[in-house]
Image (tube, rainbow, N blue to C red; front, side):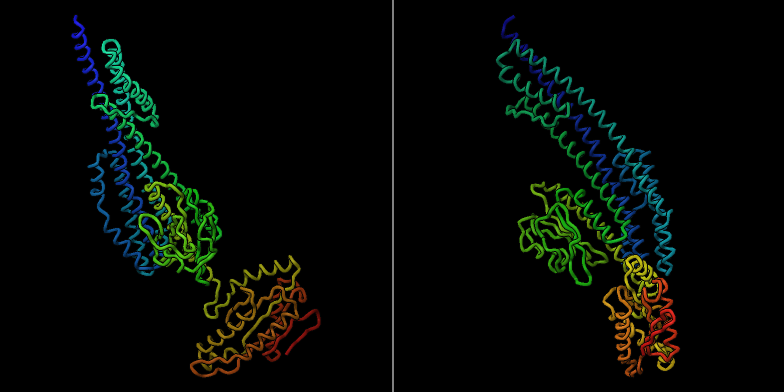
Length: 603
């Protein structure tokens, strides 16, 4: 047989094997496309079902907020979100069109039915609150049964997603097995082609086929072992080998993209778990200090690399005061600043002075903008109550930065809600402990403070005085001028007592026209001097009501001190007995409690 004929046969066989090899690689790429399609279908299902739980919790929060605050804007928001919901069949139809099977749709339908049941309970709670029965509304929305139904919705959605995961994993596994088989066949064909070229067309195989095939074979093997660090060679020739290299590059890119998506999904799951854990801890906070500790612990974990600070607004001074910091931020060094010094607080939304759009740096940064910063206001009922300040780490890809900013805003939303709840709780507690007429602490607060002070005085053997005060002939003001006049006298005396001591929570209204001053650290002589000062200020009062002066205001005083008059726990009874003596002796006087058989009296 002529050499040219052998060469032609070899060339024909080589062409055939090369074409077959390229076809097999394309089949492997097609199998990878099938795998990616399964992953994309799973992502589409996640997007379609992601809003279900968010809708349920968002409507729950709106309904709960209305029941708690009575603000009608929550009802408006609730109605608007409810109107945007579709029927169960309409919501399920999208998933059915996307390829969900009957068993998966059954699990999701059950979740939607539970969600619709929650809507009925929300409507019942809102109607009860609108009729003035807020207690019934709170029992509905904060009851155990409502919580269990929320858990059922989450469980059914989780079941739906689990079934999708199982089906997607099976599809990916089948596609991977098919791709592996095609790759194995491709390697066999490439090996046969290499042997033929070495035996018959050595110079062609060596220059045009053998070297690139060997390089591609190494890359394919590493890619088959999920080693996506292998980089396919650049082959400029336009032939089957070039197509094969392109297919390998596509395969590698798909693998890298799948790996990236899996890493992002895992990172998102971890971050969401941390956010959920932080939210649960915030709900259990009893004080601002607890909240600050939780934020300082969880913030660097939720947003790694983002140094930052938490500022909380001091309502009395109208200033943002630093509560904690993490990861050593380099700017915004001021421990406190006015709310007007931050553009995020001015505008009520996130502010970034650097990035794609240039903006104005905040004054609390000292006029510097060298570091990319993010200011996120903490708001409640449309008012700013705090600020989260972050500094972006260097060399962060744009997509990761955008994803991180979403979590930062979620973090700020959860912290703002927890801070608002704590402030509301403190305000309610303060209201429960204060007398609404005089602004002094009430009897309930007195009982708590009195126990603390007597325990402290006896443990440290420190002096303590108690001054009982009763307005003389108080009934005369009510009978002659009306109860409004009596209230005016009570407020005036309350103002005197409020200014009598610098110590907080030491002046109390026990009820009616009776008041008491606790003076921890005062001995008998010091307490007597303070009692005389209070007596003089009450005598100097000139109370007017409707343009008429009500006449002189006087009071009777009973003074007792520890340890002069016995145990600390009997101070109130001892001072009350001295007060009764002062009233029986003519009123408008200070009577000191009896020491054994002797009594002291100061007119």
